Length: 391
Image (cartoon, rainbow, N blue to C red):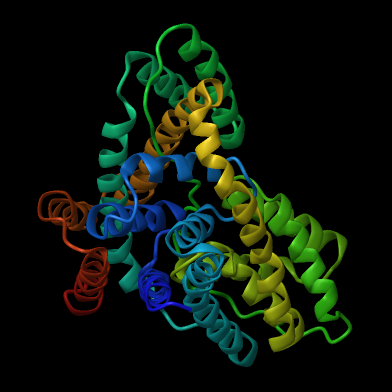
């Protein structure tokens, strides 16, 4: 291996391990952080290239932000880079989640982390908004694309499924753009909203020795190969299979697993690690993690070489443009819903959370402060407000 290749792999490992450690907030935040690093700071990709990756990735199953990391690794350092970027992004979340799973099995409960999350969530919202603003400006280069985005946004507020919104936006937009004028690019995020509380109830967490790691691996391989949609889709799928059909978990254990996946950094689907550990200890955790994430590596290895061909084709390029602007609408929809959950507490407005988000927004958009400091600053603000000032 050449020195240049080794250097590229080292760059990927360092970057994505860092993002895996600080990546709170779900896929929307992860993709925003990656955009800041690989487009704004390191210049590995143009914004157009990055938007194409996001739009195409949103049309395949699996965790979007993890797949974007894998795409970037493939582009920067080939197949080995694909593996390094993906593994380094996933590993911190898997390690932290496994630690929580061990504590859960041993003690039936988890430490209180809500003061930190109180400050992290509005800070993350500012990071998401900053990326949406940059990508949205690049996307909305024609009146046709703006209209497509607004129609998709309206459909989302009326309850249209996320994947269906993207496909319909892409197909309708492709036909319209080809018969009129072509537009530009955009972005996509499927976001798993954070839970409002991280206090977990004690439950029966004894591992089930009758379930083999192979069974767990095959189950999560199926999940990772077909899962589209939001965290609610994941909850419904796992409840129907693991709780109702197979009886591997209780409903309380499943809810606790989902909560843990939400408030740990990195990919939300590290929930699989927790579930695997609860069912069958360390072998179960390894099997579940491998089964959940392996399809993403395969899908990206197949999809990435095709994306330039999609862009080169007039019809498929128009489809990709329309999917991207539809994805910007999805990102805006997610941001609005997330802001409502963070800033509005029942009927009152949480002005402290709004202030944290405002300050973080200025630092992100005007000063372009690195996301590491935004996350750490938000966590510190939350701890001070809740534990020291008692607000």
